[in-house]
Amino acid sequence: LASLSGYQTVSRRDGGRTGLYYDAPELLLRGRRVDDVVLLGLGGGEMLRSGRRAQPAARLVGVEIDPHVAAIAWDDFGMSRLGVEVQINDAALWVRGAPPSSFDAVLIDIYLDSVMPSWVGEHEFLEASSKLLRSRGILAINVHNDPARVIAVADELHALGFEHFGALVFAQNTVLSASRP
Image (tube, rainbow, N blue to C red):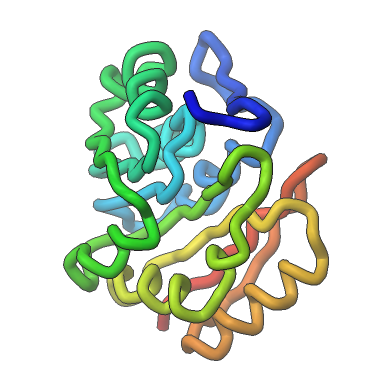
């Protein structure tokens, strides 16, 4: 791995909740009609494990720029057993080339080392990500615990026509969510 700080994830051997922001997809997707979910920034894949608990039959796709990280998620964190489709690609490029209206949920958890790149919350990336959603689809983004970023991302999503905003606050992270009309 080429990293200045290392990579981390938390996963329970029994596949249960971690008590951390990785649990957000389970909370957000439960009770919704969800056939297809994409996670931009696969990492260890724990957010997709959480999504699988809420949506056992959904198609899960993870997009990860680093092939070594993807291999660890696949082999060591059980993404192969969960039936996750892993795509090695830069999420910023992938969202521009993916078919529109192809997902019910877009989850965003992108970090470069320990820093969330500024472009993750910017209009161009959020607009491209939003085009992946079907009607009434949900977009959820880990904005860490940065109040200014929460407001800026919420403003961008509002400008893109999102509604029904929510924020799940965990110890070190806030997951902002909004849905398409």
